[in-house]
Length: 124
Image 1 (cartoon, rainbow, N blue to C red):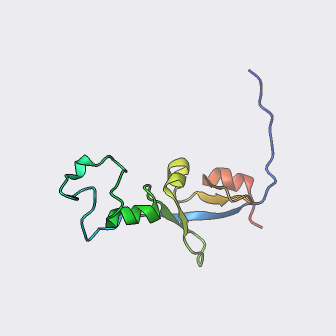
Image 2: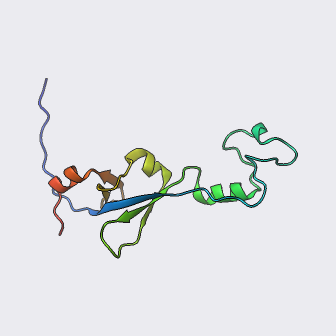
Image 3: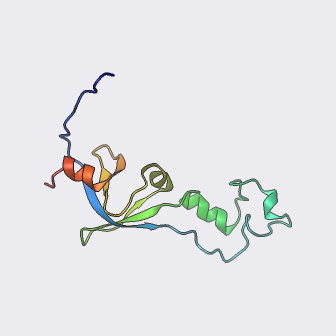
């Protein structure tokens, strides 16, 4: 087996230690929706998953928020506003309190466990 080359990190990133990950919740809709109740005299099960009618309160909400709920990442540092991440970020990175939300210069967002982040980065 060949030994892989080793590298040392020398880039600057923006990051916050995570105190809490507040998952978004779908609102309770007041009117009829295309899923979960009758729409146009058809049972909701007759509509394909994610197809939506395009005319109800739920479809309006999904159009502005997307099908995967996101979360707000709350920093340990006081005074910083929560950072909103989408559902794709949550699925890919699984952020947890105690770890770090990391944003690179090109805008890429990631998560790093505390031990790995603190071993590789010093606050400037």
